[in-house]
Image 1 (cartoon, rainbow, N blue to C red):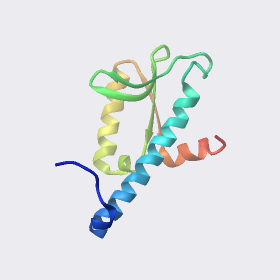
Image 2 (tube, rainbow, N blue to C red):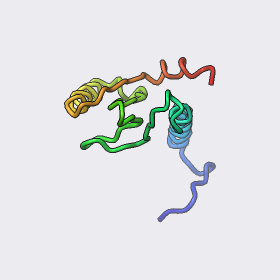
Image 3 (cartoon, rainbow, N blue to C red):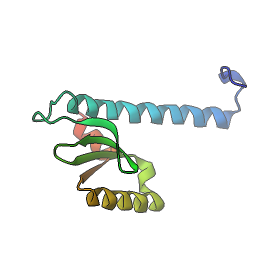
Length: 116
C-alpha cells in the first residue's frame, strides 16, 4: 500500500479530521519550536537545555540537566482525567529522580509567547 492521498477522493469526515489534525500538529510543533529557539544555545542565563531527552522511562520535552529542571507544554489532551492522572504520576516519578517539573498549558504558553 502507500502512496499519496487524493483529497478529492476522501470522504468528507476523514478529510475534515485530517485537516484538523494537520492544523493541530503544525500549531503544536510551531509553539514548541518557538520555545526551543528561546532555550537552545544557552540563551537562558547560560544554562544548556536539551530537547526530547530520555529521563528514566520518560521523554522530557525540554530539560536542563545542570538545574535538574524539566519544562513540559501540555495541549488539550492533557485535560482528560486519565491523562491528568498519568501526568501527575510522571511528575512524581521525575521528582523522585531529583527533577523539578514545570508544566505550561498550551493556552497559557501561547499567551506568554505572543510577543515572539
